[in-house]
Image (cartoon, rainbow, N blue to C red):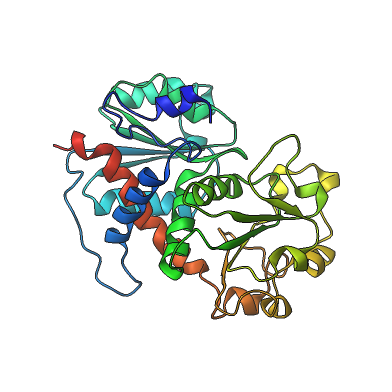
Length: 321
């Protein structure tokens, strides 16, 4: 992360003002967010406590890309903290009439919106908005091109922390379409800052990053890459971000890079298997693994609400009325 972007995320007192990227955030700040998220974690089936931490705050969800779990979890997180929530359907709004993102934000800011949760296919949109909002307004990156998805990185780290004693001695493999994955980049930023030293990036050569240095060792053989790992994070094949001629043959991809029962035998006996969703079952991951005892996929979904509650509260609690 550039120093200017990192500075943009903080206010004059050094507190987190926006959440645009995990790149550049140190272990202490990340741990504080994870600790706060753990306080909000509620297991499925339990009664969900409601809070008034953000009473009087209005949060606008601006999703310029389709989303189910991220948008739903931000809405649930804001409501559970007592905030008002505005979900703007971009396809039916003034954006469809040619209004710019910044004009939309300024219009809503004039209606006393306090925070903007933005998902966009173009790199830099969230930063541009953060540079132009009023001093009291927060911007949260809910997914940016291939570059950043900070709350996903946090919920992945929280899920790992719930199962593993510490980050320092973990062997973590991230497998699949790393080239196009904002999930991978945010997870790598979070986990390396928290102490993971053995990071493995496992993919066909065509899906490894180009002209970009990410922490970790590259592997083009999955069995070598995941051997003895404690955490295996599978990534979705992102057909919408690929050139048509780079989309793999799915049956062959599953044979070479899919997580199946046989590959469970070469990772640690207590290793966990992750996936950010949505899953292409039978491509990145077999049904028996996705639904099996090693899988923590739905724990990740559950933790998404807790993490987004922690982020919203951290950024906005001083504004609550």
